[in-house]
Length: 117
Image (tube, rainbow, N blue to C red; front, side):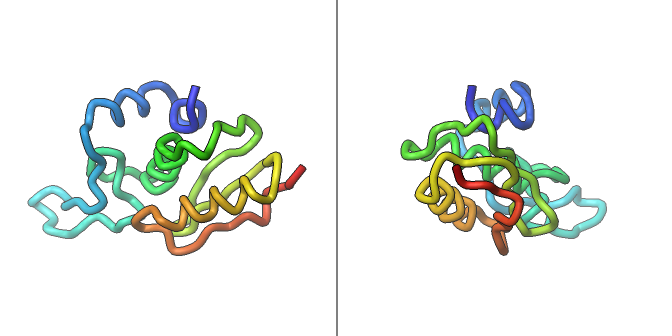
């Protein structure tokens, strides 16, 4: 099981697999004409309250250097990616921060709730 399905459920993993690429920008329905904020863009370009966290989890899954750490969770507060839990090493945490910062819409990565060890 990977990051995305463990944290958000198998349905989200299926959505990600059904889309050949994830879109980093999207438009709201034509009736509003407003763009979706980058942190709210879902796996397939749709509006999703947890879009950034899901895209970060997917990015973790797609990075061959990161294994699923079952004691760590991904959340978001606006454009801030929030990591919570325990990681095995500082090197793993540093890699996760780097990957998360590279996801469109991420303005910061909060690791204050992460324990290394």
